[in-house]
Length: 626
Ligand code: BF8
Ligand code: SF4
Picture 1 (cartoon, rainbow, N blue to C red):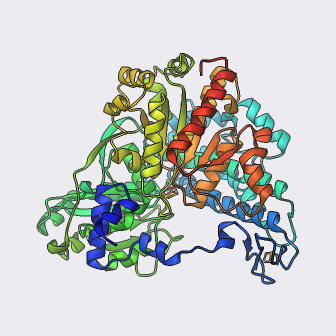
Picture 2 (cartoon, helix red, strand yellow):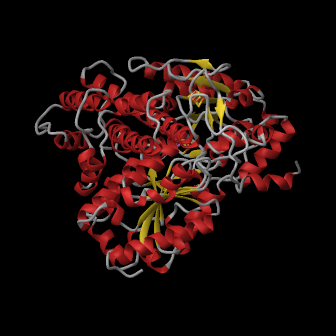
Picture 3 (tube, rainbow, N blue to C red):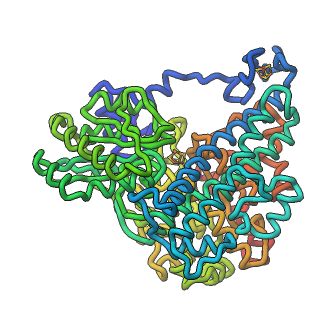
C-alpha cells in the first residue's frame, strides 16, 4: 500500500504517519487484519447464522435456495432477533459490570475497607442519597456511602419494581415502559433473562425478543451506566470545564510516557496519582527522563480528561498506532475495547503492557492485579515498570507525529446547568427562539470499515452549521477534538444562532460530556428538558448518532436511546438485514411503539439531513419555527 493510500484509512495526519511507520517497521495493524478477513461472512453480516446449540451451527440462505430453517426449526426472524438480543445483553453487561465495580468501591469506602479511595464530591453523594429516599442531612459521608451503595447493589439482582434512578425519566416515558412491560427490574435479571430467552426453545417470537432487548438496554442506560457515571463523579469528582490537548503529539520524547487504556477510572485515577509521586519522579530523572507523562486512550482516557484534564493520545483505532510511535513505555489497561492485537504491536517495540483486572487477562501481557486495598501500591509498581522500560527505549525508533490540538472538556450536566445559571431555562429559550434548533449526541467508536474519524467529525461539522448543538462521548470525542471542534473558537464554524449562544457563554458548539457510560448524562439532560417543557423525550428536537460504531455496547446505547424516545442513526449496518421483520421493526415499526426508531446511513452528510428533518418535525410539532 502506498503512503497516499493511508489517507483512505484515516483522516488524521498523526494516524497516517504512524500507518506509514507501521509499514516500515513491519507491524500489523487492525486495518491489515481487517483486510485479511475480507470478504466477511455474508450469513453473519445479515445476522443469519446461529451457533446457540450443538445441533448447529446453522445458517439461513438469504436467497431462498438453501435451508430456510435451522435444525431446531428457527427461521430467519427468530435467528436475527436472538442474535440482536445477545448482542444487547453483552453490551449492557459490559457497562453495568463496570458500574458494579464502582458500587463495590463506594461500599468499601463506606465500610472503611479501602484507604486508597475516598469521596471527592460529598455534595453529589448527598443529592443521590436524598433522591433514593435516604436522609442525607448531617450524615457522615461514609455512612451515606454505605447506604447508597447498598441500595444500588439492589439494582443489580434483588427483585425490585425498578432501578433506583429510573425516577429521573419523565413520567410519561415511565408510564409507556410500564404499559409495554419493559420497565427494567434488576440489571442482572434482565441480562440473564435475555440469555435464557435466547437458549434453544425459549422465546421464538421476534417482537417479544426485541421488546426484551429494549428492557435490557433500558437497564443499562437508566441503571448500569447511570450508576457508573454518578458514582465515578462521587468518588473522583464531578467534571467541570477545563482545557486539555489531544492527538499523538501529547506524547513526550524526553519523558516516560504512560498510556491508560480501557474504561474504569478506578485504575487510571490511581496511575495518575502515582505519576505525581516525588520518589517516582526522582527515579524517572535518575534514568535520564525529564518527567513522567500520562495520556489517555479510549474511555478511561475520557474519564481522566473530563475530571483531571489529562490529555488524550487517541481513540480506539489509534491505540495500536500510539505504540508505533516507539515512545510509549507502558500501556496499562483494565477492560473493554482493548484489542488483543495491542500486545503483539507492543512486542515489536520496548512497550510494556500491564493488565490490572481479574476479569481481563491478555496472553503476553504482564498481570498486576489491582484491588481496592492495594491499588495505590500497585499503581506505583506499574509506574516503576514504566520507568524501567523507558531505559530500554530505542531513540532511533521514536517518531512522535504532529503537535497537540487544544480541546475543552468537562461538561457534566452539573457544569452545563451551572453555566446556564442553575436552570435549563436559558437553553430552552434558545431552543424556542430557534438559535439552538436542537441537540444531537454523537457517540461511540471507530470501526476500520469506516474511514477513521471521518464520519464522526464530518457529522458534527454538518450539524453545528445547522444550529444544532452537539454533545460527544467516547471515541467520537477524539475524532471531533482533533478537528478543533471542541474549542470555543469552533463557534465560527457554527450557524449564526448557535454561534451567538456559544460566544455568549464562551463554550464550544460541540460539548464533551464524557465516556460511553456517560451517555447516561445525555438521556438525563433530555429528561430534564422534557420535564421543563412538560413533554416526553420523544417530543424533543433531539437525536443520537453512532457513525463509526463497532461494539456491542454501542448497540445497547442505541437501543436505550431509541427506547427512551430518541431517534438514532447508525453509520455501520447492523447484522439484521436477514430478517425483514427485525429490520422493519427497528427502522420503522418502533416509531409507533416507543416514539423513535433507528436509521442506517453511512454518509455523514446524508445523516445530517436525516437528523435535520427529524428535528424540524419535532420543532414544528412543538409549535416552534422549523
Ligand atoms: O465505551 S466509544 S470504541 S472505547 S465502545 Fe470502545 Fe466505542 Fe470507544 Fe469506550 Ni464506547
Ligand atoms: Fe441451529 Fe437452532 Fe441450534 Fe441455532 S439453536 S444452532 S438455529 S439448531
